[in-house]
Length: 125
Image (cartoon, rainbow, N blue to C red; front, top):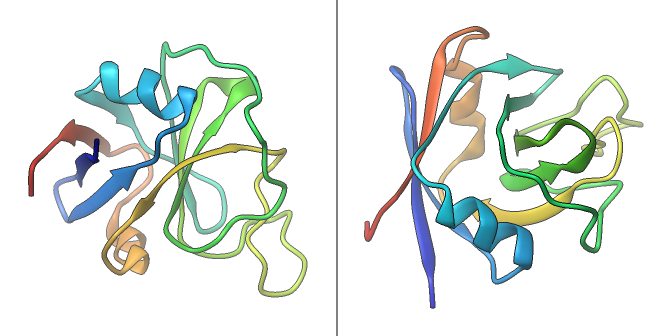
């Protein structure tokens, strides 16, 4: 079953899809999720009440990956290098569970300002 979502802020609306992992199911079952935008390089993250442990965690991710960061109970949206990156790679602060992928140009996330609001909600596109 496809778990399609929309990521919305006051400046962008992006289609995304969650994968079939246990963590992604927890996130999907908690939708809609609204949070305050925090930025770390070219990563947006929002803290949540969702609790999940490591699940095939990745130290390096791809542009457009949606991750869950277990230490901070945070959903992370990756669109470019972070302060921990080496070269052009995208490296989270510590390994994340990759739970999905943004299906449109993830660099649109550059338009979203820190401390603004962002929402993830279920969608059928």
